[in-house]
Length: 305
Image (cartoon, rainbow, N blue to C red; front, side, top):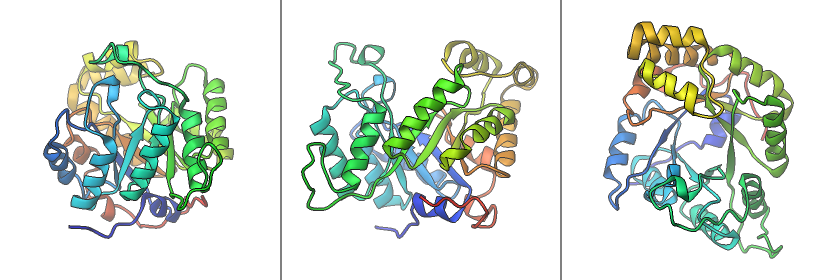
């Protein structure tokens, strides 16, 4: 059954506070587990991101699964595409196929090398990086392939990319983001933030880009979990006062911090991107009430692109 849905592009342009959630596709030919997870939160989110063989581990095609989500559940999807597994011909072919299936929101990533995943001997491609992939999707939007030949029909991709507000070298991160903007990116979904100051600073220094930014929220489920992210994951910074709260209050305090950030970000940000890390029900604890009924559908945060 097909549903009529408002697009992510439309909602952002209208100024709605956006909630997206990242799900991993199954290592299976059966999409039902992801469909069930998505169905349980469909009234809480505006779109669902589908990862592309995350951490270089084999999973179902994100394009196919994104299409199934949109077709069967009426939930708009954002499919990830990495540069690891395809050359420039394959990337363009996949993008045109995605457009034909009605899957037009894309998050462009470079991708993890294969030796980090479950097929360590697979051959990496990396013919282009994430900026090259943004340029590729943008060229197709303009009706031309990478060889300059005209397409019979052009897609209308809404192109997203990642950014890290907590990067050790913020100037370098901003330079990389500027290159993504120049390449044709339309929106940003960030790595997790764990305090309001980091988000406010990032919005201030990216104001001139005039891009909608959806800040990553990752509920910290335990003190051990928080310490691991803080010490082992590059670009993740968790302030000592946040760690102390998690140490004292555990899982519930971690969820409370994510919920506080969610509520505060509604004052000035365009939206959030939630990483539930295998526990999709956490989305309900953070958002609490269906996104459609949370606030006025329109706001002052209107984006022109």
